[in-house]
Length: 362
Ligand SMILES: Cc1ncc(COP(=O)(O)O)c(C=O)c1O
Image 1 (cartoon, rainbow, N blue to C red):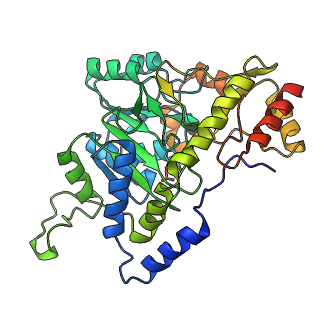
Image 2 (image 1 turned 90 degrees about the horizontal axis):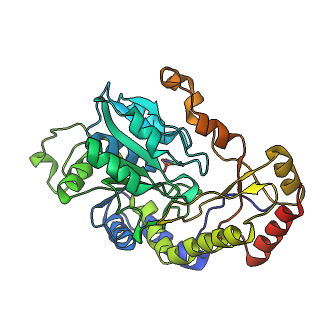
Image 3 (image 1 turned 30 degrees about the horizontal axis):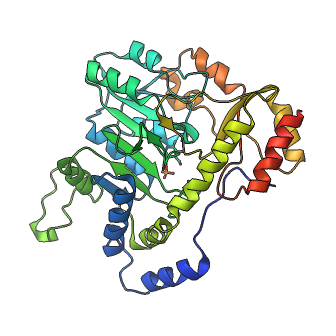
């Protein structure tokens, strides 16, 4: 069965010596390997103000704190995401306000967001779902008009771009996840991109109990409660080795995604997603809408290809019952969207076979 997700691990003969070296080095906590990995990752994204963390969820939590979201505030978000996007809003005590999605791609709809802004709105979370990029300019306009900061959850969108600029450089706060099944994994890990060195410094303290790691413990004074969110040298070593392969690996997702865009255009029973002008997806999953989805999934599985929607809509969870509202765009999108395999493990022969299967019908 061709899976929908699969962790990429660098070649054993390259990764294992590096891992063995760090494991027996006497320094497996947060140290030089983490600093080195951060430097490489910043260079790849092109943003000097990026901090490594133990997870993407940690990055989201810190992003809400840095954006100034407090208990009782409102954050506009999307139900079309993985749960951490929205549970981390609850972590800072804020209320989720559900924006509707564009039924053409499942991404947050700027017009819906605009209509929901009140004086209590303290942040807007954009999720680049499945590696597709949100309508960044439309959200920038909303942010400029209202003063509400944007947080881009790019857990699915490492290597995507907007108007030629890497995701991670386009809005005040961006988060990435390096969890097991993402484009790049360090087993677990995350990154937070912020606006300035001062914010980076604050985030760095928040990642380590509120302590300043550059000072000795005796000289330290905690002025703001922090967390234990740092990456360790073992995860960072995996990351450092992954960086040598990252362009090639992400390139395979993108090449497969573009192949499907061309080859499946106009196929019966299929509607391809609408990409906003200037958006360059990194196709973590290939996403489309299909007629009679259950039949489609059955037909693909019978032919050895996993096809499925991956995430459950977030707004149905009991913890968000006070936020529930009608979301007609979401209803429309949710009943017919599906993913097909698109990642580095899908070979040129596989993708041709997948297209043939889809075109043959179900
Ligand atoms: C959209 C989205 N946001 C955030 C996260 C959280 O990332 P992590 O698992 O690294 O905490 C995930 C994945 O797990 C995700 O899919």
